[in-house]
Structures are given as structure tokens and as C-alpha cells.
Image (cartoon, rainbow, N blue to C red; front, side):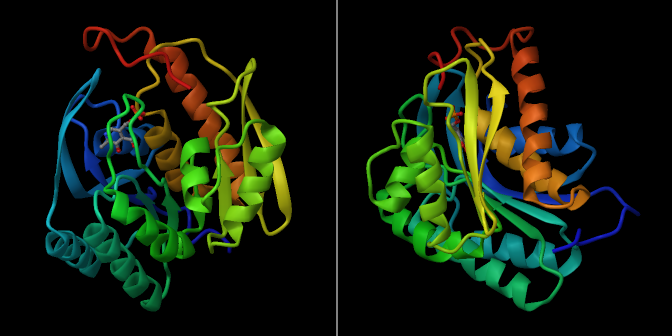
Amino acid sequence: PAPVRGDDHPVVALTIAGSDPSGGAGVQADLKTFAALGGYGCAVLTGLTAQSTTGVTRVLPVPADMVTDQLGTLTADVGLDAVKIGMTTDAAVARAIAAALRDLRAGGRPPYVVLDPVMVATSGDRLLAADAEAVLRDELLPLADLVTPNLPEAAVLLGTRPARDAAEAAEQATALLRLGPGHALVKGGHLDGPEAVDQLAGPDGVVALAAPRVATRHTHGTGCTLSSACAVLRPRHDGWEPAVRAAKEYLTGALRAADALVVGGTGTAPGP
Ligand code: PLP
């Protein structure tokens, strides 16, 4: 589709995601990304985490009916250009988000929807209840214009093993389209090589999008930042491919700047 709204106002972008108090991932990263890219950010919280730069000690879901009420109250007033969905916490919350998105679609002028199927943090901590994976696949994937799994997440959604090279990642991106999203971006950060090569599948086929691999330990929140950038940039671009390319450029800059930060003791383990 053509851009949903004109160029007459900053893009209004909503993140539906969890809180990361350390500010590197989750809603905090999403809002910073929206602002850095010129958008106006809104946020619906799906869960709280107790978290530092080294890991998660607790996840507390927001009750699903409160997620419904946040979304209903917000969207009755605010017209959204783009939505990014991150941590959906549990099956009831994931169902509540799907129901609200279906209502938004039925209301006309639907926003662009990016789904980052967050399951496990880099630190190894679970961010999604196991019984929510099926809801993510069956109810949220078909509502997404773009889904942005990393290799382990793509494998869970497809019920297979993680891709071991770029060719397998491209196959999995194409296979994901059969589950209903408009486009699928399978991120290759977990593969080896001097470049991070992502595979973007859409109705016209698959393209490989490469970016230099940035040597930094500060990769916490990389997926959150990329999916938010894709969402807020899409209304200003003519298609997902140019929007994703621009989002990857922004992410590369953010990773390059990360080593200047002095936040936390040890940071996360060396990332993908
Ligand atoms: N906390 C929240 C709320 C998140 O949404 C995410 C990732 O999506 C993380 C933590 C983990 O981020 P990472 O795996 O990049 O460390």
C-alpha cells in the first residue's frame, strides 16, 4: 500500500511491549528509536521486567484485560501510523493484542504493523510463556505486515531447527509467509561472517540485506531497536525493502555509538 498518511505530521508510532528498566531494550528502546527517527511515540505496556544490563530477574505480565483497555482507550483517540509489537508476555496478552488489532483493521486506515516475536532474551531468560508461542503464530503473525524473527525465533514459529546458513535463512523467510505475514525479515545476526545478512521475503521473492557486523558487546536491545525503526520508517518509504534498509542503517549507527556509553557493570554477553 501507499504510505498511510501524508507528510503533514510526524509519524505516530505505537509500541506494544514490555518494560526494560535498564533502557536498552523493550518499550524504553522503542520510544528512543521512534524519537531519534523523528516520530511521536506511544506505548502500551504488556509486562514489567526486573532487569539490568546483565539479565532479567523477574517478568510480571500486565493483566490481559488491562492491555485491552490500554489499547481501546488509546486508539479511540489517537490515529496510529505504525505499530510495533514486542514482548507479548503470555497467551492471554497475545490474544488481547490480536483482538485489538483486528478491531483497528476493521475500523479502516489500519496502521503498518511490525511484529518482533520476542521469546528469549540474549541473556537466556524467557520473555514469553511457552503456551503463547502458538497464539503468536496463529493469531498475531497473520495480522503483521512485517515479522522480524532472529534465527531461533523463526525456527520455533516454523517448528523446525534454526537455519545454519544464508540459504536456509532465505528458505525460512519464504516459509514464514505461508503463516500469513505480508513480509518476513529473518535476521542473520546469529550466523558467522564479517557482515550481518538478513533475508527479507515478500510477495516478489527474497532479498538479502547486508550490513557490516559491528564489534561491540553492547548488543542488548538490537532486535527491539531494529523492529521499531522499521515501524516508524515505513510510512515515509515506498515499500518494506527501502524502510528495512534505512532501519538497518540506523541500527548500524546505534551499535557504532554504543561503546561510548558507560551503563552497567559488565553488559550482556557477546551478542549475535
Ligand atoms: N526485555 C524486554 C522487555 C524485551 O522486549 C527484550 C527483547 O525484545 C529484552 C529484554 C531482551 O533483549 P536482548 O535479547 O536484546 O538482550
